[in-house]
Image (cartoon, rainbow, N blue to C red; front, side, top):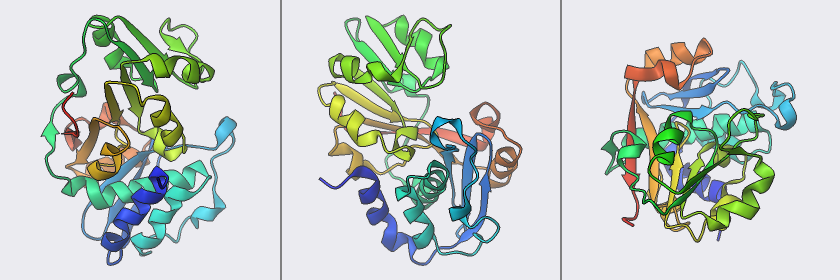
Length: 254
């Protein structure tokens, strides 16, 4: 099977042919891409591995406006994480606002867990942890950032040991940017429910259903001007509030 990111790029190439970049903002928390059609996509701003300086000459900074979207979507394939963020944001601009069968609401209203479930969470989603702990057997959170003070957070080195035993897996869509998505989905293949979540989530049901994902949980941007302003000023999800809608696509009822 073709790797996930390559298939994502191929799936939107035709749609991207006639669209251009109207605006592009690389903020401290999120990257935003606005197309000439008025569609805006977001992706987490990933800097280089190891915490290095995020500057990226390959982005052609200062000259991206007016470029064809069909060129910029290929940035998603780059090993440079900042370039990859730009590419994924462009893909999201192309597809997320047009996605069908979206159910508005918080992810916890869509994920039905059982008392005996073991939840593996890739990425730290703080607001979800306590509600999940109250309803399941165990929650394992895997996060690369140093969060030793949180009792439920485990180092990423433990993922291959623990994730195959989880019955519910919640993957941050930033795993699409850093190219770990395919390896993680392989480890999660035994899970009853696998969720891809976060503002970075590409709402591409056909691609993720065949890879075992049961729910996509992402966003629609409803106020382009406000979101661009927030991104430029270093803001993120806590500030977006009324400028976005949280949406979900149920891929498989389990």
